[in-house]
Amino acid sequence: MAPTRSLPNIVITGTPGVGKTTLCEALAQKTGLHHLNINDVVKKHSIGEASTDPEDPNTKIVDEDRLLDVIENDLEDGGQLIDWHACDLFPPSQIDLVAVLRCDNKVLYDRLKARGYGEKKLQENLDCEIMEVLVQEAREAFDGDTVVELRGEGMGDLDGNVGRIEEWVRNWRKDNGK
Ligand code: DAT
Image 1: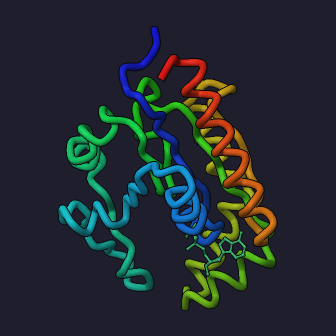
Image 2: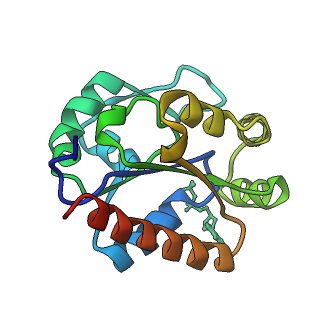
């Protein structure tokens, strides 16, 4: 059955630092889709509890049920670029594309270091990328043809990814008669 939303919902996911927000901002500008930055939603609605890890007090543990309640109408409306480092909480029936951004570990190391991450958090995130945690999560939670992997190292990748998703949106609209 064709979805009622007139624009698709796209999850842009991946390890912190791979370039999700950068891609979402560029895509929002190009496509007019709405950048739904889950970090901002969590802050705005106070649905994150501070981590009890003394080395990582700024990380928030998010109440996923409350998060889904808060974004329910946005997902129903469609046209959302969902920017978050997890994807398996979103209902597959409301998600049209999951793009998992990947990044070379040397590049990622420099980006996370520049963010001021401590050694433990830095290593956890590098391990997450090497072990392909987000790719596996996406492939377990969504149909194979919903999930794509994109590279996020350089500006050429960014332009290519924007063009590719723009074209995907055009095709989605055509295929769904929107
Ligand atoms: P994320 O939202 O996944 O945590 P980000 O968008 O904040 O990542 O990007 C992290 C840093 O990397 C930021 O300084 C911008 C830079 N960056 C992101 N994508 C890039 C790209 N394709 N080419 C060069 N730099 C990029």
